[in-house]
Length: 327
Image 1 (tube, helix red, strand yellow):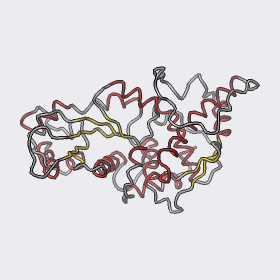
Image 2 (cartoon, rainbow, N blue to C red):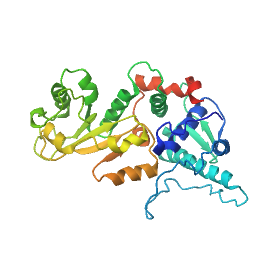
Image 3 (cartoon, helix red, strand yellow):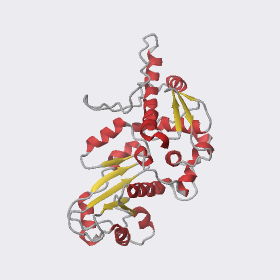
Image 4 (cartoon, rainbow, N blue to C red):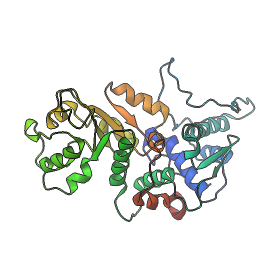
């Protein structure tokens, strides 16, 4: 197999990056086997020296996202240390693929046959929401040229639509800000359809601010007329950035500041969204950094039965149409 970039998504999402590359290869009709991945990782020295999993969970944490119904065949004492380590590392990638299949079911356009061979089983025209997010993630990480809106803006719209699909009123203030002259004007244009009242004069913000750390705002109103104190509002940071930026990025929404900007009496709930599949250990680590932030990753986005927009449809063609960037 050709060489995948182990740090494509940064050091804390190595297994996720390799899983994405394997999916892209499967879309292109390549025979993707776990044995081939393990052999490559051993030859490249990607065993415990570098490591795919850089986190340790508490002893009582549930780190078994998917039960291994096929058993663990990694305890063969006849294997050399390097071979054994390489297969264990490959198992981490396999676990992510199995988690995707288990959590998404028919929404996952791949089949993991006998926990060994990955095969593309989606539509022939690649008109798939999951492939759109996969292609968007790979396009941003590899700096591929694109037509239409860039990945960082498309994923904001996807998260907005995701929040709407969960029953919220939601707007992409990042997109609205790009069409307005000032942050204050953009805030007012964002708040009107959300049944919220913008109060930019109640908080300090940068003169040339784009979105003040928040890309998507969501509101769960009880009725169109109920503007009483204690409303349910969410403010979210959305990024395509590498995994080593996630801890800082998720801290960007400031509930106290946004409480004032939105004229609220209760601080809004922050959330953080990425187009990547965040590995379970990384998700546990991020959750341990704060007790106030919720998380949305690719698997949660893909579980919402969202339509394939024209922007996503273009990115869905990326895994099959760009051969060189995977080598």
